[in-house]
Length: 116
Length: 113
Image 1 (cartoon, chains in turn yellow, blue):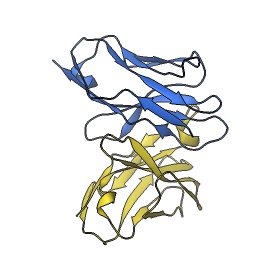
Image 2 (cartoon, chains in turn purple, brown):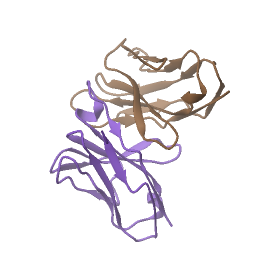
Image 3 (cartoon, one colour):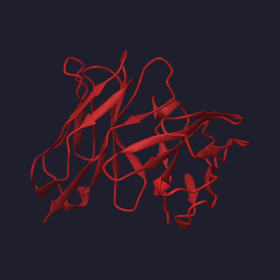
Image 4 (cartoon, chains in turn red, orange):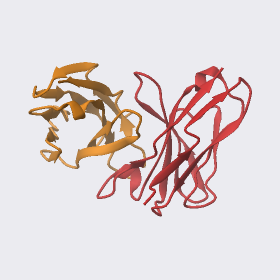
């Protein structure tokens, strides 16, 4: 019963490098989300997806890209890492929109990214 | 747009003290309201929720009542424990088909023995 799995847990990047944060869920959820969490700032939505093949921008999409080729996977790509992207990234999924109704939002354990 | 405002932290309490964390919201229509909790080193998990006015969500001794007249969803617990130390997030999702959960900034709670 894995839920939402994120990898890696920690990563240090140099400015200008690129990387992909992986997110996989095994609950057959249609809705998936990427958030970033900065100290004292709560969670900001980066991108979300309402199903395979469909993605949309959230509040802070600049500098990131996503794809959703399968129901299970929702990777987040950073193309040219910048210090402003130093943050903790959380992937989440739900059966219903935003975890409303009877089905809640399930979060991964997070990926801590540092850009130097 | 939709927004959530939480009381600023951090909050430090002694064990068995009474806890209140204030949360107010701005949203169109009739949003659903949530409290999520994040224990150290972990992702967020749902603590409780309420989907319509006057509903009371409760879990693990925590309660929150959906007050439409004051647009509030304050979190309360009568007697906190050291194990309640965590960051608490108030959140909402608008009615009308929005897929996006909007979070407050979070309130860090530390409970001392």
